Image 1 (cartoon, one colour):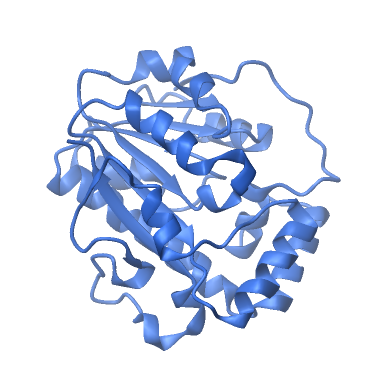
Image 2 (cartoon, rainbow, N blue to C red):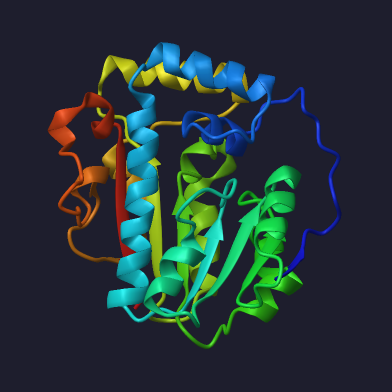
Length: 269
């Protein structure tokens, strides 16, 4: 495993971070008091939130199986990868083809440290520091450039990250910049919190904004705009449980929280 982060940032345990809050909501142990405080506020606003987080992780697994197993993609770029958990992207992909190459990108030094430790000795997977708000720096990162063959299709994973990009940070333009750099035949996966008109949405968004300074639920039409220039593959942009569900995938109707996020995969012509 190789990796470059463009310089190591100091770790401030007093400030919450998205990846560690997510880890806490998943029931992980790689988080601190500030992260747990944010997580508890979100849980207070939406007690069933953990079901939504687990559904997000499950749809990521299904997407990776689809990209590698059905689309034949053998290289994946996971931006906003978060902390290592069970069933990581590279593990899922390797069960289908051990030669699949994976690049994890995150802006949290703790994430980078954990990932490097987990992947020591894994030459097919690399870790790079990067921020989705600066796509050019990700695309120019030596680890990213060297690890992926940019003449062949890439699977770009944007799972649970774009809803943390504020409107003024131009999420559609940031996504378009990444898509423009992808070779034809590449696929883009987006998981995004969905503004369905549910009153709980405003409460959770307020808790996220107050604690993390970011978090935006968007309408289906707004999320569709992130796929501009891509061809949506079946079943299109749908509620998370409805995207190519497994036999044991809970139905969206079984829990209101499962209707608060959508997922889709687009193909670059």
